[in-house]
Image (cartoon, rainbow, N blue to C red; front, top):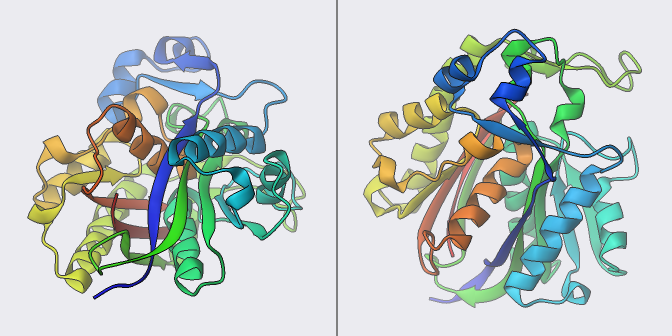
Length: 322
């Protein structure tokens, strides 16, 4: 039976030019390439140039997604941008992207759910398209996350990088197993002190830096992510064996391995880009998705499962067919 749905028509990404390797980091803080690789799987990360804004990265990813979808920017009537590192306190960075793309219709706004942001943005745009409020959406995850790092804290500064990824969503009719299929998003504010930034507009009047209790975050991540994935599968009637590709948030290779093992997922189905990108927060899922689409691993018709967990705590999972 056909119904109103949203479909991913194209994907894109943008990475800054500067690469910061583990060897580079070892000259800045007490760490080593071996220490970082063993604990995180990360080899390098990208760093935005001076004067390069989150909106610049987001616009670059959006343009590539539109080109790959064969859709002109003039058709876009919704932009939902997930970011923790906006250009300004206001207006929303999505409105700057809207302007840079020359879009003069529709709506544009930001979503803030840290590393889970892209999935929250995808669920929001999907819901709006299904309700026929809009027809064509850009869903973007973009971060200049390195600007909120304490470069003297080796437990956090080795983890993160900058980048952006985007997808184009468009309304259409299809069966219930086509297009974007289901989401499960949750938060637990009681855990907010385990991963946070120690600054803010109404608290300190400063930007602040990332603070994290890594062992606690690791433990909760595997449990929460696995629960979200299982909920999506239960709600839709799929099993883990039905999944063609698993595109997780690229937080840490140990977390990726832990979730895959807990779910009984074939490791060959797991898309991992954490070694090259580091943790790019809200950008990591669309970056990883576009990487796997571009190199031919993920093909049209494949069933894809994504998951993420971030500060808040926020977490979630989404299921879609390309």
